[in-house]
Each structure stands twice: as C-alpha cells, then as structure tokens.
Image (cartoon, rainbow, N blue to C red; front, side):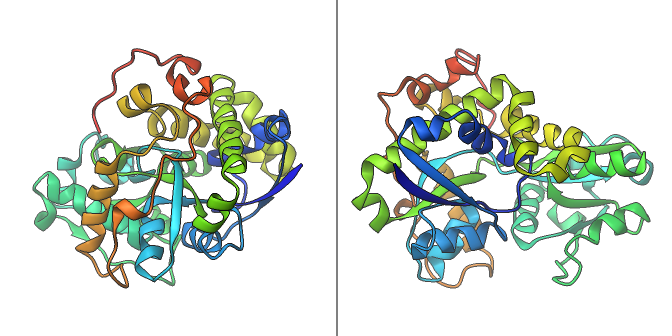
Length: 329
C-alpha cells in the first residue's frame, strides 16, 4: 500500500465531498493507496506545499498555481477538477432592489470583494460587459476578509464578491432572499486543480494515475449520489451535521455548475485545455498579483490521466451528461 498525502485547500466542506466519498467507498484502497487527508489554509498554501514536496498532491485553485509559479516554485497541475471558477457576485434582494440576473445590472453600483483573486475576476467580467468604469469595485481590505457580508447585510454596499453559495448561506442564516451571479458562467478560466511536484510525479507515475482514477470515481459517484457524498463528509467532520443543507448545496453547485463543460464531454475527466490556462494567465499578468513571469503551458500536464480508464474517458456518460452540450464557457 502506497501512502499519499493529500493537502486540501481548506477545512472539510461540501466542495470536497467527492474525495471523502472516494476514501469512504474504498476507491483509493482498491488502487493500492493509503490517502492521508490534511486540512488546509487556502489554495496558495496547498499549491506551495505540493510544489515544495511537503505534500504529494494538493487541491488548489488555478490562479494560486500560477501565482506560486511567479514566486519561483514549480507546481504541476495533473488534473482540472472544476472547469469554471467558483467566484461569484452575490447580493440580497432587499438591498439590490431587484433580482440580480446579469452583470450589466451592476452599473452604478458599489461592489465589495473579499479576496484579491476574486476581485480580479470580477473586474474582468465588468470589463468584458463594458461597465467597469461605471461600477465602484472596492479594494480588498486584508483585515476584513469576511466582513463584506456585514457590509451587504447593513446595505453599505450593493453586492459582494466571493464564491458560489455565499449568498445561499446569507439567505439561510438571515432569512433574506439572496441572488448569486456565477462569474464562471462568463469567464472561461479554471477553478480547482489537483497539483503535485514533478519529482513525485516522475518517480511515481503509476501512483499518480491511481490517485486520479480513484478521485474521478469519487467525483462520478458523488455527482450521481450527492447524499452519500455529504454523508461521507459529515462522517469525517461531525460538526458539519448542522450545516448539512449548506454543504449539500455547495457540492451540488460544484457538480452541476462548475465541473462540467463541453471539453469534459469530449476529452474526459480532469483533462486540461491550454486556452483556459492562457486566458487566466493573461488576466493575472495585467495585475499586481504576480511576483514574476509565468508560463501557463508549464504548470499543467495530461500525462498522468489514464485515458483508457472508462471513468475518465467516458466520465460524461458516468454522470448522465453524455451528449449534453454546454459550450457557454
């Protein structure tokens, strides 16, 4: 049995349910792997841990992978988990005054972002629809990461930038109708990836392929049986029992709205699309987020995806999406 340390991007939550289901149902064990999950402190931390070889695999956002490359690290993304960014603009109906259904409605509004990376994506969306100069997109205050929600609750801003389900959580906690505008529906850039370091992948190619096969099975099973996935998550962290509804919603949004695109249908689970990496790299390069040059082509590979495995090659069919065309980003 080979031991693999898996550095998560955060503490256990609904977005991570497929990995816990894969372990609970023995998919990793069947591949000869003992996968040890490590709770995280954000995508940049996970990407750096993997790049340094302090973890064998990390779960990290694509922007964090490129950011770490700009710092001189050499992270290697071996699979794309969600094809769309989870970033979202959200608001409360009684604050915004109407349902938020398209980005053009943000013209003349004040929007507060909670993180630099999501602010960059929001700015690009506003630029793309031609209203960037008509929206007051506030700077990120590093001391008030979660307080944008308070600004929205008291009506001092019209909308906030976070991730999908932030609005749902506000609605549940405060009984006020919320609306969310997923940025991933408009910008064709990656969300979460599985990242490693070249030394580990080169020395353990079959271990890497085994890990990805088992993880793909976890995503497929979770997508077709979300309740089982959340049960596995709660079994890992009993404190999430009271948040079961929210964690279920997080996973369903990830499964239905973030992981599937036409590229998944044609190329299978986890496969990289160079264009999405280039697009994200171009966005980041126009900001002060990067510490140095980047090469989007150097941070990913499809080498370790077992395209002969049905769960990877025919993933769309496994989740009942074969023949479904979702080309909008």
